[in-house]
Length: 368
Ligand code: FES
Ligand SMILES: [Fe+2]
Image (cartoon, rainbow, N blue to C red; front, side, top):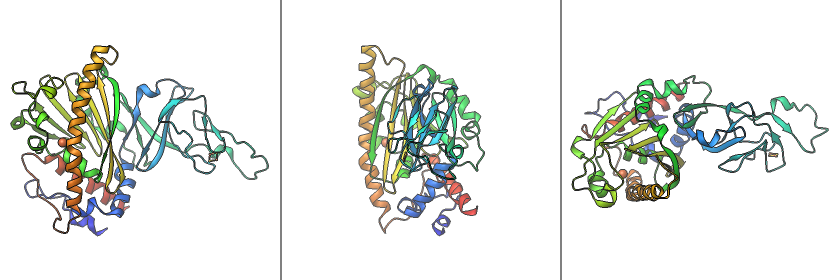
């Protein structure tokens, strides 16, 4: 695909440009991303607390593929394509739940929690039908911290641990995410390609003073740091209390804010005692859904719930501020006047890493 050649991944940051604008608007490239970037990488599928008991399941879709993760009667967590072997309907339709068996709502075929085909109503007399080879097709699952991940592409052998790298898992271990509990999920729709949202996230705080006045009032912008790993980027900033805007200052406390991006589409945002994660889900070449999960140390007591809700509201405000700019960028990327832009050496090393990883993933598939 020739548009891949329009990006030169060998250039150092001070000479580099962004990936070309065509990558944000081209449908063929978008389809290729689903088959490569979203299939070779470990993708967030759910939280471990949703699937702690036998029979508990979560459904999701990854790279356009319907997926179900279920804990078997034997206690083992398994992942499957959520596609019935009869006529392809989704077998499980709720976002999460608990079931004794997996029953397709269309013609009532049933599968065990381990994915084997069990019940096929009105199917006697069908010849050469091998029940044993008509179980649900499986995908790889992995567990890290409080999450379940899935990887679609079986041909790449990289384990979840290798994918995340030990330097990242060791760093995350230190901040004790286990003390935090899930509180609430919110969905945001962006009229842009998924990479516009990721670029915006990875700009090293560049847009914060201009677009997010509340957030800007608690971050020490000149000491904002950017550290690239192999497949992740940590952006972190000391927090300040002096001059903090009231609504934001009340719920963003502690010494520092940590913003982890894990290639390609998962973010962990951590303040003292507050975490939210972002999962960036492509919904079309210029449509993106971002799923936010908010976590807090106390999600039970009424006082804490009130504080948590105030913290979520600040997160909501920041997203609302990003929605309009992402739409504006997508429109500009479609303009004949724009092909690519340069990167700030001080701020945009994370975007540079993102673009090089993308280029590597997309080109590898074309070589195969
Ligand atoms: S599609 Fe599932 S039973 Fe027919
Ligand atoms: Fe932003």
